[in-house]
Amino acid sequence: MSTSTIRRRPSIFAVPWRTPAGRFSWLKLVTLILCIAPVPLIGWQWATDNLGARPVHHAMLETGFWAIRFLILCLAVTPARALFDWTRVVMLRRMLGLAAAFYTFAHIVLYAADQDFALGFVLNQMLTVFYLILGTIATVGFIALSLTSTDRAMAAMGRRWKLLHRLIYPIAILSLWHFFLTQKVEIGIAAVPAGLFIFLMLWRTTLPGFRRSIGGVAILAVASVALTALGEAAWYALNSGINPWLVLDANFTTARTTAAMFVAADLVLLIVIMAGRRAQLRMARGDGKV
Image (cartoon, rainbow, N blue to C red):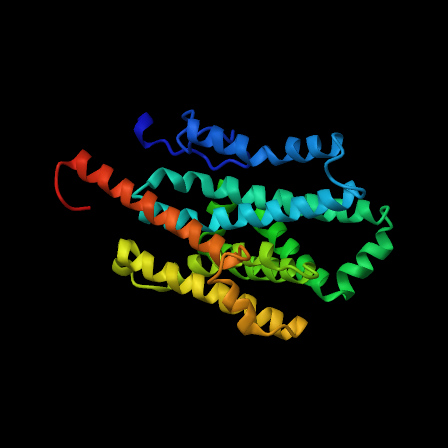
């Protein structure tokens, strides 16, 4: 048998900075370093007393926030591939998803540590308190996706693998819902990733030609910012009794930096990068279209 017909056997573990073909990748190495970076960052904050009077509690919150960040980045891989004509970015999806799972598990461990590892109490809370139930279900989902993230699992499960990994969408919804419920007063920190999630889901539901165009992305961005603002106003109205018109009005003033403003800034940056990338491709191809 010639070497060209030999198939690479699916493996359980692969060196994270190598491509599926076994080649070294600077892109994957840099991404790995960025995925690991929050650990020493939180450790440094802890060592320098920058986590407040309850460092374990604040470290728990930080790991939860990093889990959400990496989850959003994982979901952004498919749009990035299409919008930037960047096929190599697909190599990063598994790493980003595992990073989200890792920080989710760290979040649970630190929650137990914050409760002095009273495991009976911790388990009771996770199964009876609503926002912790949401987090527990999301964590179980992360475990299932992590255990089946290998090449071998993908080959063994066939079409069922893709069906299972579509659970990432309800997992994201549960994670964001959990995040909202943990915010006692100010929900802006949870509304920003929620707004970006809205954009990513709207992008997936529209026609390919529309969602690949700069105009289409701009329309989806405007819709996402509007839904973020409306969602924030509705949340405050339903949970705090605050006049929703006052919350909406804040989005049109400089008195308060709102979640919708952060989402708008992120999506404007996306459109600028997208336009720059397309100009680069036009120059490289020597034509006037991309």
